[in-house]
Length: 172
Image (tube, rainbow, N blue to C red; front, side):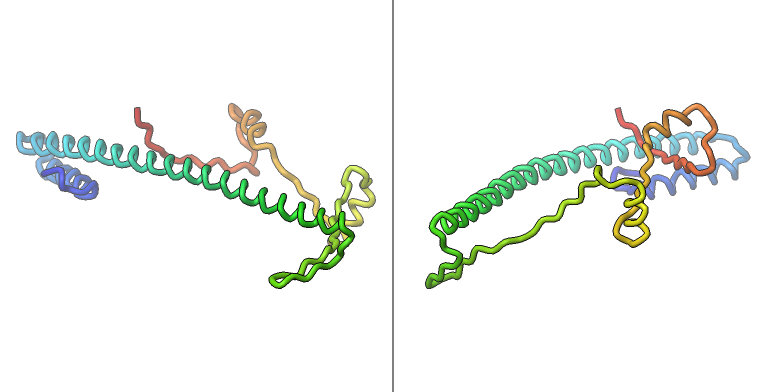
């Protein structure tokens, strides 16, 4: 076996060695031992190669994240500049008393919009219930997962909790 074998090839070779071992009634011959050592070395080498590539990809992801953050900051700066320019244009029209200005390139009009804000602190339970019943509100329930974990960590979890266990690789 050489380093050019895939991880699947190495696994397949382990299965072949297992078959050879079963055929020899569990007796580990010199040939089986040599192939086992060689395949274990190939596996170790392959895992090291995968880890190196994984570290490389992690570096790429971190680099892209930093570039993404730089572009995000730049975009926000540009968006804020646009907002300030529009505010200055609006202010100039308000100060001069112009509701409309027509130029060769654009038409400018001072308009008004509404922003509605519901003061949920001022709504009592009866009004909340009525709003939910009329489809104008939602009754949202959110669990605190970290507190649930703490409470049931060393106890039997109730039926309404599903605990999924996953295997992962730890590399030191």
